[in-house]
Amino acid sequence: MSVGQLEPLNFVSGKWTPGRATETLEVFNPATMSVLAQFTGAIEQDVDEAVKAATKAFPDWRRTPPQSRIQFLFRFKTLLEAHASEIAQITTQENGKTLAEARAELQRGIENIEVACGVPVMMQGYNLEDVASGIDEMMIRQPLGVTAAITPFNFPAMIPLWFLPYAIACGNTFILKPSERVPLTARFLISLLQETGIPEGVVGMVVGGKPAVDALLHHPDVRAVSFVGSTPVARYVFAEGSANGKRVQCQGGAKNHVVVMPDADIDMSARIVSDSAFGCAGQRCLAVSVAITVGEAAKPFTDKISELASSLKVGNGLDAGVQMGPVISPASRERIESLIHTGLEGSGKLVLDGRRNESSSEPSSFLDPTILSDIESSSKLTDTEIFGPVLSMKSASDLDEAIAILSKSRFGNAASIFTSNGNYARKFRYEVAAGNIGVNIGVAAPMAYFPFSGWKDSFLGVQHGQGHDAIDFYTDKKVVIERWPKEWSRKF
Image (tube, rainbow, N blue to C red; front, side, top):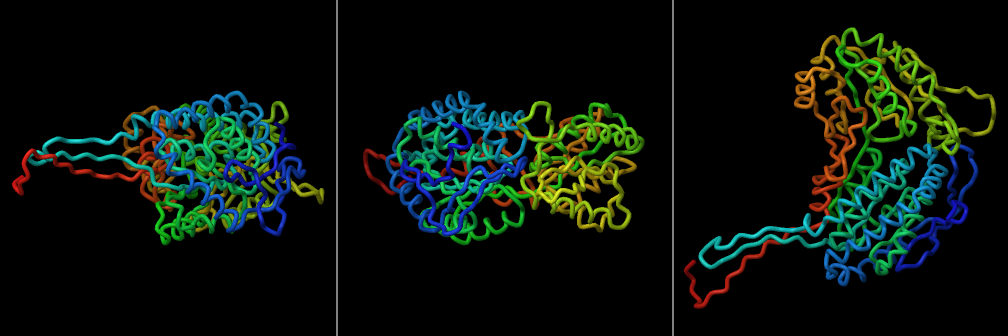
């Protein structure tokens, strides 16, 4: 199925239907600015219908044995692998990333399906006989009911698959609200899931903006909500969802730091950090935003990463040889360029200027890699998530100073160190307040069987996504205490 054949419709009770909003939304290819699709978004009535369908499907689905539920996921995985090239093409056209990046994100999503297929083991409880004389006690896990996920534009295939497989494997029903900027990938994913024969109402999708989000957050029959996006919106989703009695997990923004020690392999470190900072045009919550060089590492590292960044081929992600695509929209490019300007106020300097200053009046989403240095600690840029291909350089005299610099950040998603010294590495992972730590790793992205952690303003909630945390999030624990005496007595 090509992108031109996809309509961003709602999926309710096994049927595809348009939203009831009066205004028309458009999906653009950020590389060409061509319109890929037009649609009307979901409103409260559409969400209510999706929730009612999920509520109706829940009793039968929760009674379906876990080993039967995961058979649909096995089929789904096979279909995703068979259609991987088509999915990557759709993702690249609506998001802008390269085909290689689109294929890679789908693979990470498939890995979560593989882990969720272990739910017959992962969902098990535990028991103990004779907690008192003749009394046995057990803990069992049961599904919550209707669950939902609100997902962002930057990983249209992967992030929905952080949530959907675990939710339905645990016996819940599930509603996806993808970003209205990139609904076509999600449309294709759900159409493939439909091909597995999964019962109607077990999975639904609503496509729209804030009205759809608010309807999910306020609906009394939605038990749990997962969210990935910026920290301000994460705070809103967490507050509204929690106030309405829902279990909520919100992955927020980031300002990830990497420390480069003098004993690191400078050339390889620069290559890895370049991939991290400028991959996916910097539009990922694990992208390196700030590189702190320690001591004599400053000049060689800065020279090498500037050389690498300036050599990256930027263009349409569908074209051969392109290494970095556009950002998601002209408005995003303008916002990023404004932040670059903010960083240059005062003592800030341009090491590499990625602003194109194109004379054409046509809107453009393209921005080349940019490297800044000497940003004042009081600058707005120091604590603002740029979400674009911009790397700030800082220097420190030793590891203690480097850790002190990154510890001032209000975010705590990820941090990495490059070194050949085990003492430095241990000190870093022991002291740094971030949920995902990399040692000689540019993007500290956990595998699907580990939680996708995040600290401070990068996460709101208790259980994270992926692995055992996902099972905890999507189930309630019930403790059962049993007594079956031959003769009744109040003596225990």
